[in-house]
Image (cartoon, protein in one colour):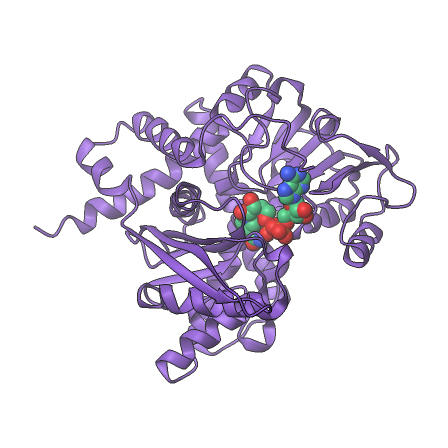
Length: 422
Ligand code: NAD
């Protein structure tokens, strides 16, 4: 059973994205003309992806690419392969990318893509054919100067390599800058794989400093032990925090003395799940969300903390490593309960920041060492956290609204100075 199956999905993610835009636009007193220019996706593409399966049968999948904004630069955003992908989910994720890139002040707009499929039930060869066919279908609208995809849920550096290869075969020359999150052997950046979790960690560290919560010994709970969640958990451990519970689609594990996270990573790589990790106790998804702790990191999918379970949360800080895990209703419960939220468009922006570094390196054919990447990432994450935190304090608004005000405000300024073609 999925860990969030017991919670009701109250709103689709795109409705949430639109609601958060309106809140920010109202707080900024944004002109209606500017709202009309920046609120909705600029371009949406729906494609049919027929794939020959290993059995010889052809199965048709549906795929999407949405470019929400190119006001501040090319569209940028990941590709998700998941059974629950819908056009509205892709729209929401594309919209969040726009504000996220503006929050960390990198020269991109926002985009997102996805294919409704279950990669866990496909062989590597089927996955490669699906990826190449999808890449061919979206090829006319992507490119290093137009729209640059990256990995998201259930898409990997290998999948990015296949997209880069498909695009390059069509162009007739290698174009490494068409996707980020590639393997390092193919123009990928050192530090990209860890970047999202690393950024999550930097924002938690800044929050702890501002709230006078010691990182040393901070009890930490992670929902979704994938790329973002496992790296954030690893860095929290390295900083002296105690990760007491983690989960994945198969279940949740708990150890009040703290889990040995590097060993959990090895165990999950070997067995495919965290469940059954020696010395841990199995708990329910509801117990995990309600665990008393200093830091709760939702790092799985959207809508995992809703009006239904928000009141059970007993964390002091909720760090949104995932995109959209906390609904607006849950935000209001957090405000009432004085729970400090690090919003997704700030918290998980480390991934797109190092994707930006990767693109810069590809376009310049000059590569940086890992220390350089991490130092530049830390500088951007700390600065962005401070920018959002200052709005939170000065304007007396919660962190979600502060981040949206910063992101929406920057995109609005870009739109105003560009103007409209008559
Ligand atoms: P991933 O596929 O590596 O990991 C997702 C993990 O969540 C898996 O371990 C899966 O088992 C677990 N999971 C899924 N549904 C769950 C559920 N219902 N309960 C508990 N666990 C569940 O994906 P990822 O790249 O780590 O992405 C996770 C989230 O972070 C997504 O919302 C994604 O959009 C966001 N994000 C990722 C990046 C990145 O660079 N990887 C960047 C920004 C945001």
